[in-house]
Image (cartoon, rainbow, N blue to C red; front, side, top):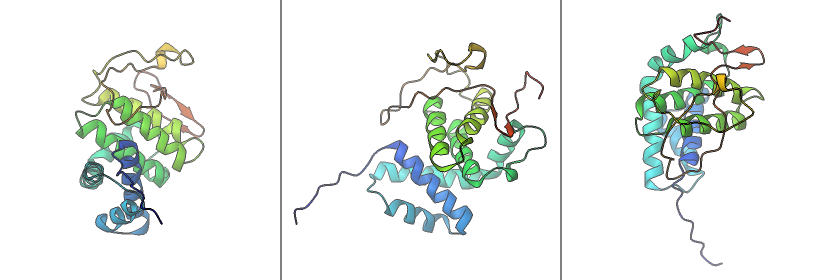
Length: 197
């Protein structure tokens, strides 16, 4: 049988997925960070840089989870708490919030776009819009709020677009996911400071 040369992946998109799986397993299965991360990483051929990025995300989210919750919870509609949302959405929000608040060189559009992709893959039918809305509102309050450049998408009213300016993540081609400032996702309503709910 011929040997196949599998090049280790340096994809940040895959690294975020592995970080998500690690955190989800730790939360749901009661595994330690190390156990969960080893299981999630064993399913992929990852570069050393990817493994380091995953470890930074997982370790950072675990260390900062209470502070991240304090930032995220006020962005939910009145009467909603993070304990009422799906675990998958909560974990994805934690990862993206950590990136927005603690990884200063990570472009916010990449963070939000890839969080929405994860939510669509691992959450409910409405998870993508929900995650998008919460993170768009968090971005406005984050240190990255001044990253400005137009998003070209005629399907979104100008009043709902947050404009971003960034150098693309060199490892990824971000998906063109609209970032909305306020959104209603089924029974979830995401709070908007300038508009009563």
